Length: 178
Image (cartoon, rainbow, N blue to C red):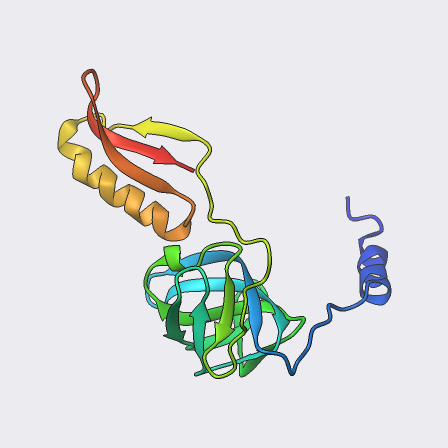
């Protein structure tokens, strides 16, 4: 284990070209993941394709056509490293007081209000649940506790959907799709 790792990493740095993008074009970033922070809201993990995102800019999410002020941008290296900007070719995070992680859908495009892109990056499709499961509390008195737990899980996984369902044998529960 670990044999040749240093050489592999050096080869990656030396032989693989850095991502390119147009710094002067309208800002466009692809959301490839997101997480929910209790104190700061949704954190969008992004790859910036064009332009620049600055702290305090206003950003717009194409899928929901909603705007948020950017509180922080930066790099993620086991923890957050805040920066003043994220530019074309960089991978990092954007925090913008987004209280619902469902607004930061994987594959969506972020742009800025100041210099908006006219179209999103190609290929976005809303996540469609493919696997479903029925979840029921062991005691019917715990139904609301189960709802709260699923809602908390949904904060960190925007692809999770759920709706109440009833079973004659099991009582009240939820149909969950992911």
